[in-house]
Length: 325
Image 1 (cartoon, rainbow, N blue to C red):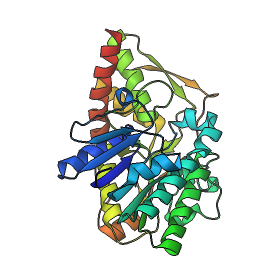
Image 2 (cartoon, one colour; image 1 turned 180 degrees about the horizontal axis):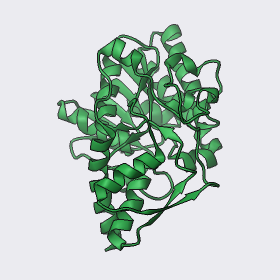
Image 3 (spheres, rainbow, N blue to C red; image 1 turned 180 degrees about the vertical axis):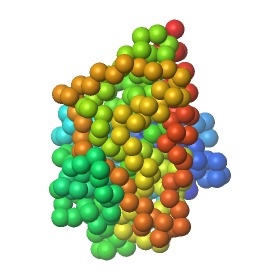
């Protein structure tokens, strides 16, 4: 394949599509790779070398990163909490992707390799209360991450570290905290809480049936990072000098019930809430400690949840309306 400034695996996904768009805006040449057929990609850009391929296979990974200066490995089998809790083996199998893309990047002699890890690597003992203490990078050890998805992410972080130590591959790792925004999954079972809540309230607003269900009691707490902040932080960390994993997430902690309040206000309606206590809920509380990212880069994700949700809701509303017409 031809030489390119950047390769993005998982380019057909939510974050990958936005990252490709941002790199193009900087004048970079980009190759995007995803296992999904092109008509299932969230964004397809005409100026990108878009390739359908399964980078869990070593030969495909080698072809995907050939000629690349920088590799952003975002490819993984994942989704929202419902998917993660019910597909642990499938999530673990992403280790093939993480391993083979890193191995191929080493062989290709890339300048930088970025790995998208997750807040799911953090030990469960730190996440048992809604009034959670924000998670620091060192809280990942002693290790007891989220089963399935979290274990795969933590293992792949360690692998990136050892490829740096043993082979000199310049690896960089960010731990994403609940990324949301437009042009992502909003239905079908893999969507995350912000998109799901926007969909439910948009449906209520459009149909006039002002009732929604909420997984759990709604008192579980999280921080949510808007997609533009995620993309900016990803590029910043990739270009940075520190290879140790760093949190990339907002520190604006809210409960799920509070997030519903925000979306209700954006939509201009109130809904009757039914709480499904049998649904997957994940950890009781999770928040990003941004001390380290501020220390390293003088920056932390600036977009407020209200601003990000307003943009997300408007997009999801249009998608729901189109689907119902």
